[in-house]
Image (cartoon, rainbow, N blue to C red; front, side, top):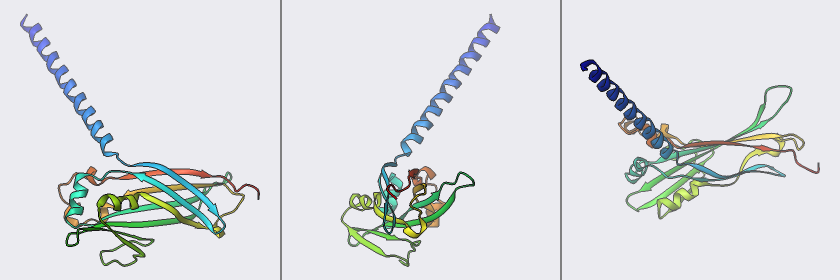
Length: 209
């Protein structure tokens, strides 16, 4: 009888540990899903006489850690990337054009205003390479500009053939490598600074040519 009771207790203990482990796995899965807060509600490529233009609409929420850093005057950087690839049945696909858009969101504590900066070249704290900058009254207004990409030229007409089929690859992410080292090496969870999405669409040949 003692042996039977011991085995029953051991089985109950194992079952309890399995239940706890499953609960932890489900909890981690739920957190991971909650952290994936970026969506791409629109992605469009349009050919024009002078080249190819990309338009996109993103939707995401910043984590509490990112908003806290912004409120302390620490700028946050985003990068949008577009690659135009020509499909070739006889060989590997060929990349014919590539474009990058670097964006920075920062808060000015003295004026209590938000600044959005954008450039085709990497941005630095000194502001080198900035070709567009605008101030806003709220973070929501500023993020709306980040999330909306309209008529972005990603390829010149000379790089495209009218009768060729292309693949447009788009990627958007928060660039944590631009953060101060104290934050990069701190105790903040890496997931707090993970915000990324990637999509691709087919671009058929132009019709009527």
